[in-house]
Image 1 (cartoon, rainbow, N blue to C red):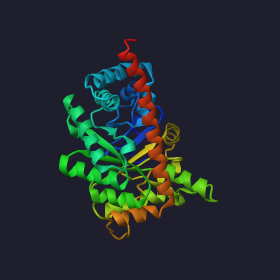
Image 2 (image 1 turned 180 degrees about the horizontal axis):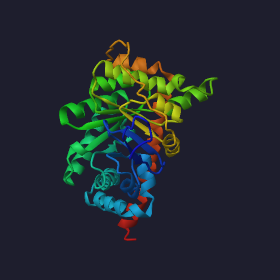
Image 3 (image 1 turned 135 degrees about the horizontal axis):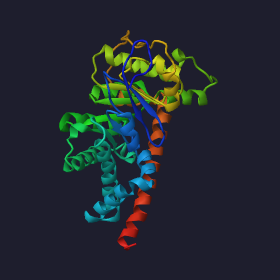
Image 4 (image 1 turned 60 degrees about the vertical axis):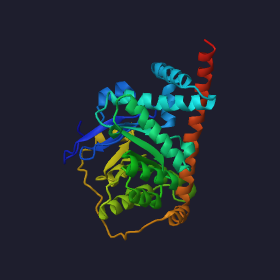
Amino acid sequence: MYLSTRNRRLYTFLLFHPLCRLSLIPQRARHLSVLSVFAAIDEYKPQDATTNPSLILAAAKMPAYQHLVDQAIKYGIANGGTEEEQVANTMDKLFVSFGLEILKKVPGRVSTEVDARLSFDKEEMVARALKLIALYEEAGISKDRVLIKLSSTWEGIQAGKELEEKHGVHCNMTLLFSFAQAVACAEAKVTLISPFVGRILDWHKENTDRKSFEPHEDPGVISVTKIYNYYKKFGYSTVVMGASFRNTGEVKALAGCDLLTISPGLLAELSQDHSAITAMLTACDLEKIHLDEKAFRWEHNEDRMAVEKLSDGIRKFAADAIKLEAMIKEKMLSVKNGQ
């Protein structure tokens, strides 16, 4: 599919569910998206897809996917253990089951998220990630077709580093809002990061007197531009995917980024825009820095926006995981009672 521009750059469009968001991905990078309604995957032919607890929760409530929920519950019960262990096994199986369905339809990779409640426990994140990978491999899927999604806490970043270095598991670092997080991810040599342009803008609108920004002044655009330029100047291989755009100006201001994710409304606007889209990002004059744990925690803590948005994101994903667990417990009880 082509986005109508004078320079005829090829893009792949990926439909998101249930937020109904679309991804705009340059062919040269062709990477990442989110859990899709499978019919939409057929329509838009995405290269890759991703899930998170909020999306799994929404999808698990849909009649079309009840067979996946039922299969996961049977798996959890069959593996025995305490109720807590059965629910945990069911959750892992459910996440992987959705991933497997997606991989039947996309030629690339699926991104599966580790429980956000483990965001400050490196060892548990690694263990859970390896368990997810094992479930994929049991189903005949190579780890090369899976991205493990981790929160960009210090512990999450170090879990990503260990998974990449010791186990050859590729990681997607999410909930990234600060330059310190980006630097630490680059030094950890993780596969991909997801800085959120729009959420950064939202915070500044809510917490400052400024209520509107031109694209070149947009705090989210400035943040991702700095990260991208830093990565390219110093040759980091980690992929930068700008996400959560609020207007087409932000999208155009970040033209040339490895990956961009845009909403259906903005995509519709862009499809009617026949002006040339010029790559706006180039390597610039930045000094290389190194962040150990103490330096990371200090630098990240100095960014009030990033601290608040990271913690808020973790809390919301954790809340949806708890809701999903409650739903599973109820259904599991019904199965055990023969209902």
